[in-house]
Image: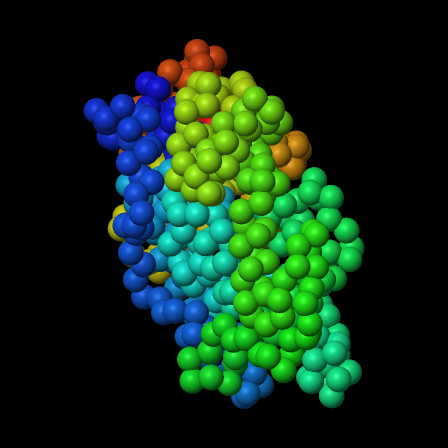
Length: 438
């Protein structure tokens, strides 16, 4: 039964009919190979999204007629991959790191590249060095567009002097505050300004045949610059050196170790829990594989979570319900209302966590307090009731045992036995405290 708990805590939820003979720790570790086994169909690369955006702008088209199909195709193929994944831990890590390095389709210009960002910047680096993930994120057009670095110009650069334009500090500030060292490093506003100057010229060449990252020397603030007491040269190499410095900084390792423990295990991680993950990063030059292994090896990592585990976010809850009920992307044609991938997308939106639509650059909260207001929990029950109505031939108790194993409480079993209908029994299961937590 411990394997079911591991599926719930480190994956997207247990599925019926799955039996594992591999020890749970080995099963998780095997998902941390260097290559991403997931394949996505029907989608192009970042340049395709940028070309669609450019064409819309040139032709003054309203309503994103060219970008919207790209976004819909990305949501469909990536949702399908989640439902069918045989490596749920790896996929949980992908969505964790996407949230850490949030970009959001709330900004129209990001919609056509947000899916490519996940596939191109996040997924290839899940088990590599953190600094390589950081480099990929900071040079991806989705991040440069989202945090407005495409409009950041060195005041003393040729472009700045001619156009009377200046710095945009958004990317520099969020990289320091959220992505790397965090405020615990004691950086100042002058560090933010200096880092913004270092990153001037980092943008997107929308005029290229295949648009993508572009360093524009004429927009770069000239001269040597200081960041956290370190000197960095002018030019693109100065930005690369600064990111290498931040991406391997001990404060960064401590920050991301804290974030990993908080996301997977507890809202309030202790120093004792953080230390092994930090040590793994610090001793391996930031290996995310080593950090992930240290995470699953923490004492109590696979303990039952009925009363003390993490509250599932809306996305985790919807995914767990779909997987528990045996939903697969092949179950129904894509254009039917009950297609599981459509249910995943609409369910997340209905419960307040629409995919790739975080309201702020700090992403979605991991804290239970953000998702456990009475109205939020009632919305989950209402959604579960509507979804349960589609499961006309499923045995509620079989689903309960497959989804929860030994975490299934006698109180929940009794309530399900007394339920007036299959739909009511499944709603009670999905609304139970042990199903809400992982």
